Amino acid sequence: MTQASEVDERLSQLDSSDVMSAPRSTTQTRTFAFTFGIAFTLLYTVYERLNWPLFTWQPAVGKMYFWLHRPLSGEGPPMYWYGWIALAIPSALVVGWLATIIPSRWLYRATIFCCALGALWPASLAALRIYIADWATFDADFLNSAWVAAIPAFAATIAITNFVSSRLAERVWTSWLLIVPIGGLVVLGNSLLIYFVR
Amino acid sequence: MDIIFSVIREDMFWRTLLFCHFLMAVALLAAVTLQAASVLTSARQAAGNFIDRFSPVPAASYATVIVLLYVPQALLGAWIYLKYRLYVRIPMEQLRHWWTLGAFEFKEHIIAMGIGLLPAYWYLWRDPVSDEDAGLRRWLTVFLAVTVWYAFGAGHVANDFRGIGS
Image (cartoon, rainbow over all chains, first blue to last red; front, side, top):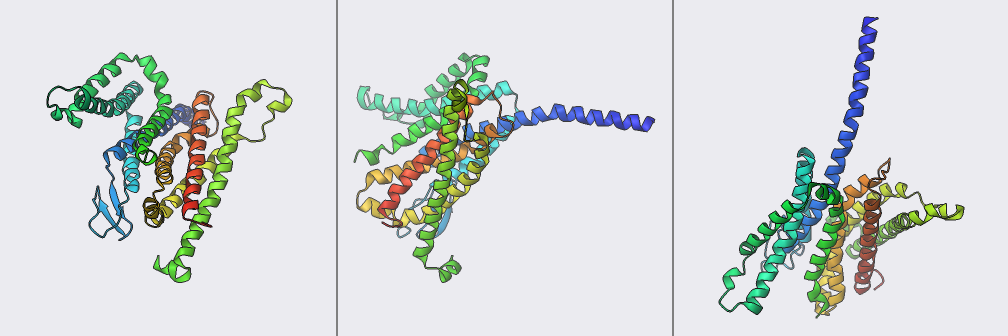
Protein backbone atom coordinates (compact mmCIF):
# COMPACT_ATOMS: atom_id res chain seq x y z
CA MET A 1 0.00 0.00 0.00
CA THR A 2 2.83 2.34 0.91
CA GLN A 3 4.69 1.38 -2.27
CA ALA A 4 1.57 2.00 -4.36
CA SER A 5 1.11 5.46 -2.86
CA GLU A 6 4.82 6.23 -3.47
CA VAL A 7 4.45 5.18 -7.11
CA ASP A 8 1.34 7.35 -7.43
CA GLU A 9 3.18 10.26 -5.91
CA ARG A 10 6.16 9.81 -8.28
CA LEU A 11 3.84 9.52 -11.26
CA SER A 12 2.03 12.69 -10.27
CA GLN A 13 5.42 14.41 -9.87
CA LEU A 14 6.42 13.20 -13.34
CA ASP A 15 3.14 14.46 -14.78
CA SER A 16 3.55 17.84 -13.16
CA SER A 17 7.18 18.07 -14.33
CA ASP A 18 6.00 17.32 -17.90
CA VAL A 19 3.43 20.06 -17.63
CA MET A 20 6.11 22.42 -16.38
CA SER A 21 8.69 21.42 -19.02
CA ALA A 22 6.39 21.40 -22.07
CA PRO A 23 5.85 25.17 -22.25
CA ARG A 24 9.57 25.73 -21.60
CA SER A 25 10.59 23.50 -24.53
CA THR A 26 7.94 25.17 -26.70
CA THR A 27 9.29 28.57 -25.77
CA GLN A 28 12.83 27.44 -26.53
CA THR A 29 11.79 26.06 -29.91
CA ARG A 30 10.03 29.33 -30.68
CA THR A 31 13.04 31.36 -29.59
CA PHE A 32 15.39 29.20 -31.64
CA ALA A 33 13.23 29.17 -34.79
CA PHE A 34 12.61 32.92 -34.74
CA THR A 35 16.19 33.85 -33.88
CA PHE A 36 17.49 31.51 -36.58
CA GLY A 37 15.26 33.24 -39.14
CA ILE A 38 16.35 36.74 -38.10
CA ALA A 39 20.05 35.81 -37.83
CA PHE A 40 20.17 33.84 -41.08
CA THR A 41 18.59 36.56 -43.19
CA LEU A 42 20.74 39.28 -41.59
CA LEU A 43 23.98 37.30 -41.85
CA TYR A 44 23.30 36.13 -45.38
CA THR A 45 22.93 39.77 -46.44
CA VAL A 46 26.11 40.76 -44.59
CA TYR A 47 28.14 37.84 -46.00
CA GLU A 48 26.93 38.55 -49.53
CA ARG A 49 27.75 42.25 -49.28
CA LEU A 50 31.19 41.60 -47.77
CA ASN A 51 31.64 38.59 -50.08
CA TRP A 52 32.51 36.18 -47.30
CA PRO A 53 31.72 32.70 -48.62
CA LEU A 54 32.68 29.66 -46.54
CA PHE A 55 34.00 28.17 -49.77
CA THR A 56 34.25 28.98 -53.45
CA TRP A 57 33.20 26.45 -56.06
CA GLN A 58 34.80 26.49 -59.50
CA PRO A 59 32.31 24.58 -61.65
CA ALA A 60 34.39 24.52 -64.83
CA VAL A 61 37.22 22.59 -63.17
CA GLY A 62 35.17 20.99 -60.35
CA LYS A 63 37.37 22.43 -57.58
CA MET A 64 36.40 23.75 -54.19
CA TYR A 65 38.49 26.31 -52.32
CA PHE A 66 38.09 27.33 -48.71
CA TRP A 67 36.83 30.92 -48.19
CA LEU A 68 37.08 33.49 -51.00
CA HIS A 69 39.01 32.40 -54.05
CA ARG A 70 39.66 34.63 -57.02
CA PRO A 71 39.67 32.39 -60.12
CA LEU A 72 42.99 31.61 -61.73
CA SER A 73 43.40 31.78 -65.47
CA GLY A 74 41.47 28.98 -67.15
CA GLU A 75 39.40 28.12 -64.07
CA GLY A 76 36.23 29.79 -65.36
CA PRO A 77 33.70 31.74 -63.28
CA PRO A 78 33.58 31.22 -59.50
CA MET A 79 30.40 30.42 -57.54
CA TYR A 80 30.05 32.05 -54.13
CA TRP A 81 26.32 31.58 -53.44
CA TYR A 82 26.76 28.11 -51.92
CA GLY A 83 29.49 29.50 -49.70
CA TRP A 84 27.37 32.37 -48.36
CA ILE A 85 24.56 29.97 -47.47
CA ALA A 86 27.00 27.41 -46.05
CA LEU A 87 28.42 30.10 -43.74
CA ALA A 88 25.07 31.68 -42.83
CA ILE A 89 23.49 28.37 -41.72
CA PRO A 90 26.02 27.39 -39.01
CA SER A 91 26.36 31.03 -37.90
CA ALA A 92 22.58 31.32 -37.50
CA LEU A 93 22.45 27.94 -35.73
CA VAL A 94 24.97 29.19 -33.16
CA VAL A 95 23.08 32.46 -32.72
CA GLY A 96 19.80 30.53 -32.39
CA TRP A 97 21.31 28.24 -29.76
CA LEU A 98 22.76 31.18 -27.82
CA ALA A 99 19.32 32.80 -27.89
CA THR A 100 17.85 29.81 -26.06
CA ILE A 101 20.31 30.07 -23.15
CA ILE A 102 20.33 33.82 -22.51
CA PRO A 103 17.52 35.66 -20.69
CA SER A 104 14.72 36.91 -22.96
CA ARG A 105 15.28 40.58 -22.16
CA TRP A 106 18.91 40.30 -23.31
CA LEU A 107 17.77 38.57 -26.46
CA TYR A 108 15.33 41.36 -27.34
CA ARG A 109 17.99 44.00 -26.75
CA ALA A 110 20.66 42.03 -28.65
CA THR A 111 18.30 41.65 -31.60
CA ILE A 112 17.70 45.39 -31.73
CA PHE A 113 21.44 46.02 -31.41
CA CYS A 114 22.40 43.61 -34.21
CA CYS A 115 19.64 44.71 -36.60
CA ALA A 116 20.32 48.41 -35.99
CA LEU A 117 24.06 47.86 -36.48
CA GLY A 118 23.39 45.85 -39.63
CA ALA A 119 21.47 48.83 -41.05
CA LEU A 120 23.58 51.69 -39.68
CA TRP A 121 27.08 50.42 -40.49
CA PRO A 122 26.63 50.32 -44.29
CA ALA A 123 24.46 53.46 -44.12
CA SER A 124 27.25 55.24 -42.26
CA LEU A 125 29.82 54.12 -44.84
CA ALA A 126 27.56 55.28 -47.68
CA ALA A 127 27.06 58.65 -45.96
CA LEU A 128 30.83 59.06 -45.52
CA ARG A 129 31.40 58.30 -49.20
CA ILE A 130 28.78 60.88 -50.21
CA TYR A 131 30.43 63.39 -47.88
CA ILE A 132 33.89 62.69 -49.36
CA ALA A 133 32.63 62.97 -52.93
CA ASP A 134 30.29 65.97 -52.65
CA TRP A 135 31.01 67.97 -49.52
CA ALA A 136 34.55 67.58 -48.23
CA THR A 137 36.81 70.62 -48.77
CA PHE A 138 39.96 68.73 -47.80
CA ASP A 139 41.54 65.36 -48.71
CA ALA A 140 39.11 63.13 -46.80
CA ASP A 141 40.02 59.80 -48.37
CA PHE A 142 41.09 58.45 -44.99
CA LEU A 143 37.38 58.51 -44.03
CA ASN A 144 36.55 56.02 -46.77
CA SER A 145 36.97 53.04 -44.48
CA ALA A 146 34.57 50.49 -43.00
CA TRP A 147 36.35 50.90 -39.65
CA VAL A 148 35.89 54.68 -39.59
CA ALA A 149 32.23 54.18 -40.51
CA ALA A 150 31.97 51.74 -37.60
CA ILE A 151 32.50 54.54 -35.04
CA PRO A 152 29.30 56.57 -35.70
CA ALA A 153 27.43 53.32 -36.49
CA PHE A 154 28.28 51.79 -33.10
CA ALA A 155 27.56 55.05 -31.28
CA ALA A 156 24.14 55.40 -32.89
CA THR A 157 23.37 51.71 -32.37
CA ILE A 158 24.20 51.89 -28.66
CA ALA A 159 22.03 55.01 -28.34
CA ILE A 160 19.08 53.34 -30.11
CA THR A 161 19.45 50.14 -28.06
CA ASN A 162 19.40 52.14 -24.83
CA PHE A 163 16.60 54.42 -25.98
CA VAL A 164 14.17 51.60 -26.84
CA SER A 165 12.15 50.49 -23.82
CA SER A 166 12.15 46.84 -22.75
CA ARG A 167 8.45 46.65 -23.45
CA LEU A 168 8.85 47.90 -27.02
CA ALA A 169 11.87 45.63 -27.59
CA GLU A 170 9.78 42.63 -26.56
CA ARG A 171 6.77 43.71 -28.62
CA VAL A 172 8.68 44.23 -31.86
CA TRP A 173 10.90 41.16 -31.53
CA THR A 174 8.81 38.90 -33.77
CA SER A 175 8.45 41.72 -36.33
CA TRP A 176 12.18 41.46 -37.08
CA LEU A 177 11.34 38.15 -38.73
CA LEU A 178 9.71 40.14 -41.54
CA ILE A 179 11.66 43.39 -41.36
CA VAL A 180 15.12 41.80 -41.70
CA PRO A 181 14.49 39.62 -44.81
CA ILE A 182 12.60 42.41 -46.57
CA GLY A 183 15.33 44.92 -45.66
CA GLY A 184 17.97 42.41 -46.76
CA LEU A 185 16.26 41.96 -50.10
CA VAL A 186 16.11 45.73 -50.58
CA VAL A 187 19.88 45.95 -49.94
CA LEU A 188 20.67 42.95 -52.15
CA GLY A 189 18.28 44.13 -54.86
CA ASN A 190 19.90 47.56 -54.80
CA SER A 191 23.28 45.94 -55.40
CA LEU A 192 21.84 44.29 -58.53
CA LEU A 193 20.65 47.59 -60.04
CA ILE A 194 23.73 47.60 -62.28
CA TYR A 195 22.07 44.88 -64.34
CA PHE A 196 18.85 46.83 -64.79
CA VAL A 197 20.31 50.21 -65.76
CA ARG A 198 22.72 49.01 -68.44
CA MET B 1 28.45 11.55 -62.38
CA ASP B 2 30.33 9.46 -64.97
CA ILE B 3 28.22 6.43 -64.01
CA ILE B 4 25.04 8.42 -64.64
CA PHE B 5 26.31 9.75 -67.95
CA SER B 6 27.15 6.23 -69.11
CA VAL B 7 23.44 5.43 -68.80
CA ILE B 8 21.89 8.69 -69.94
CA ARG B 9 23.19 11.45 -72.22
CA GLU B 10 24.48 14.43 -70.28
CA ASP B 11 22.16 17.00 -71.85
CA MET B 12 19.19 14.67 -71.35
CA PHE B 13 20.15 14.24 -67.69
CA TRP B 14 20.18 17.98 -67.03
CA ARG B 15 16.95 18.49 -68.97
CA THR B 16 15.31 15.75 -66.89
CA LEU B 17 16.48 17.43 -63.69
CA LEU B 18 15.18 20.78 -64.95
CA PHE B 19 11.83 19.20 -65.76
CA CYS B 20 11.63 17.68 -62.24
CA HIS B 21 12.49 21.14 -60.89
CA PHE B 22 9.60 22.55 -62.89
CA LEU B 23 7.13 19.89 -61.70
CA MET B 24 8.09 20.43 -58.06
CA ALA B 25 7.81 24.19 -58.60
CA VAL B 26 4.24 23.81 -59.86
CA ALA B 27 3.30 21.67 -56.85
CA LEU B 28 4.94 24.13 -54.45
CA LEU B 29 3.33 27.07 -56.20
CA ALA B 30 -0.10 25.49 -55.84
CA ALA B 31 0.42 24.75 -52.15
CA VAL B 32 1.77 28.18 -51.17
CA THR B 33 -0.83 30.01 -53.23
CA LEU B 34 -3.73 28.12 -51.67
CA GLN B 35 -2.33 28.65 -48.20
CA ALA B 36 -1.61 32.33 -48.77
CA ALA B 37 -5.08 32.87 -50.22
CA SER B 38 -6.54 31.05 -47.24
CA VAL B 39 -4.75 33.19 -44.63
CA LEU B 40 -5.52 36.41 -46.50
CA THR B 41 -9.23 35.65 -46.78
CA SER B 42 -9.69 34.13 -43.31
CA ALA B 43 -10.42 37.46 -41.62
CA ARG B 44 -13.13 38.31 -44.14
CA GLN B 45 -14.59 34.80 -43.97
CA ALA B 46 -14.98 34.93 -40.20
CA ALA B 47 -17.23 37.98 -40.55
CA GLY B 48 -19.24 36.75 -43.52
CA ASN B 49 -22.27 34.54 -43.99
CA PHE B 50 -22.34 30.73 -44.10
CA ILE B 51 -20.92 30.50 -47.64
CA ASP B 52 -18.21 33.09 -46.90
CA ARG B 53 -17.19 31.11 -43.84
CA PHE B 54 -16.75 27.94 -45.89
CA SER B 55 -13.03 27.38 -46.27
CA PRO B 56 -11.98 24.77 -48.84
CA VAL B 57 -8.33 24.86 -47.68
CA PRO B 58 -7.30 23.74 -44.19
CA ALA B 59 -4.28 26.07 -44.24
CA ALA B 60 -2.34 24.33 -41.46
CA SER B 61 -2.26 21.01 -43.31
CA TYR B 62 -0.31 22.62 -46.16
CA ALA B 63 2.60 23.76 -43.99
CA THR B 64 4.36 20.38 -43.79
CA VAL B 65 3.88 19.80 -47.52
CA ILE B 66 5.32 23.23 -48.26
CA VAL B 67 8.40 22.65 -46.08
CA LEU B 68 8.88 19.17 -47.57
CA LEU B 69 8.69 20.62 -51.09
CA TYR B 70 10.61 23.85 -50.46
CA VAL B 71 13.81 22.24 -49.14
CA PRO B 72 14.33 19.58 -51.86
CA GLN B 73 13.23 22.09 -54.47
CA ALA B 74 15.91 24.53 -53.28
CA LEU B 75 18.50 21.72 -53.23
CA LEU B 76 17.53 20.61 -56.74
CA GLY B 77 17.73 24.20 -57.91
CA ALA B 78 21.16 24.52 -56.29
CA TRP B 79 22.31 21.44 -58.23
CA ILE B 80 20.99 22.72 -61.56
CA TYR B 81 22.56 26.10 -60.77
CA LEU B 82 25.96 24.48 -61.48
CA LYS B 83 24.92 23.97 -65.09
CA TYR B 84 23.28 27.39 -65.27
CA ARG B 85 26.48 29.15 -64.23
CA LEU B 86 28.46 27.77 -67.17
CA TYR B 87 25.98 27.04 -69.94
CA VAL B 88 23.29 29.67 -69.42
CA ARG B 89 24.75 32.66 -67.62
CA ILE B 90 27.83 33.07 -69.81
CA PRO B 91 25.81 33.24 -73.07
CA MET B 92 23.38 35.51 -71.22
CA GLU B 93 26.23 37.92 -70.52
CA GLN B 94 27.57 37.63 -74.07
CA LEU B 95 24.15 38.40 -75.55
CA ARG B 96 23.64 41.20 -73.00
CA HIS B 97 20.44 39.85 -71.47
CA TRP B 98 21.09 41.90 -68.34
CA TRP B 99 17.50 41.99 -67.08
CA THR B 100 17.20 38.22 -67.22
CA LEU B 101 20.56 37.86 -65.49
CA GLY B 102 19.75 40.39 -62.77
CA ALA B 103 16.34 38.84 -62.18
CA PHE B 104 17.94 35.42 -61.77
CA GLU B 105 20.58 36.79 -59.38
CA PHE B 106 17.77 38.19 -57.24
CA LYS B 107 16.11 34.77 -57.31
CA GLU B 108 19.17 33.31 -55.54
CA HIS B 109 18.78 35.83 -52.74
CA ILE B 110 15.02 35.54 -52.35
CA ILE B 111 15.24 31.75 -52.13
CA ALA B 112 18.03 32.00 -49.56
CA MET B 113 15.78 34.26 -47.47
CA GLY B 114 12.95 31.74 -47.81
CA ILE B 115 15.19 28.90 -46.60
CA GLY B 116 16.19 30.92 -43.55
CA LEU B 117 12.57 31.57 -42.62
CA LEU B 118 11.40 27.96 -42.97
CA PRO B 119 12.03 26.91 -39.32
CA ALA B 120 9.97 29.87 -38.06
CA TYR B 121 7.29 29.18 -40.65
CA TRP B 122 7.15 25.54 -39.62
CA TYR B 123 6.92 26.54 -35.96
CA LEU B 124 4.11 29.02 -36.60
CA TRP B 125 2.01 26.43 -38.39
CA ARG B 126 2.59 23.46 -36.10
CA ASP B 127 -0.29 22.04 -34.21
CA PRO B 128 -1.90 23.63 -32.21
CA VAL B 129 -1.79 26.89 -34.13
CA SER B 130 -1.62 29.75 -31.61
CA ASP B 131 -3.56 32.99 -31.92
CA GLU B 132 -0.64 34.90 -30.42
CA ASP B 133 1.32 35.00 -33.70
CA ALA B 134 -1.59 35.10 -36.16
CA GLY B 135 -0.41 38.28 -37.91
CA LEU B 136 3.17 37.09 -38.20
CA ARG B 137 2.01 33.69 -39.48
CA ARG B 138 -0.14 35.38 -42.13
CA TRP B 139 2.59 37.65 -43.47
CA LEU B 140 5.33 35.04 -43.28
CA THR B 141 3.11 32.74 -45.35
CA VAL B 142 2.55 35.53 -47.87
CA PHE B 143 6.30 36.24 -47.94
CA LEU B 144 7.07 32.60 -48.68
CA ALA B 145 4.43 32.60 -51.41
CA VAL B 146 6.07 35.68 -52.94
CA THR B 147 9.48 33.97 -52.88
CA VAL B 148 8.07 30.93 -54.68
CA TRP B 149 6.18 33.02 -57.24
CA TYR B 150 9.21 35.19 -57.95
CA ALA B 151 11.52 32.17 -58.24
CA PHE B 152 9.08 30.49 -60.61
CA GLY B 153 8.85 33.56 -62.83
CA ALA B 154 12.59 34.26 -62.92
CA GLY B 155 13.36 30.58 -63.48
CA HIS B 156 10.84 30.41 -66.30
CA VAL B 157 12.39 33.43 -68.05
CA ALA B 158 15.88 31.90 -67.69
CA ASN B 159 14.54 28.63 -69.07
CA ASP B 160 13.14 30.50 -72.06
CA PHE B 161 16.61 31.87 -72.71
CA ARG B 162 18.26 28.46 -72.64
CA GLY B 163 16.45 25.45 -71.27
CA ILE B 164 13.73 22.96 -72.10
CA GLY B 165 11.98 23.86 -75.36
CA SER B 166 14.03 27.00 -75.97
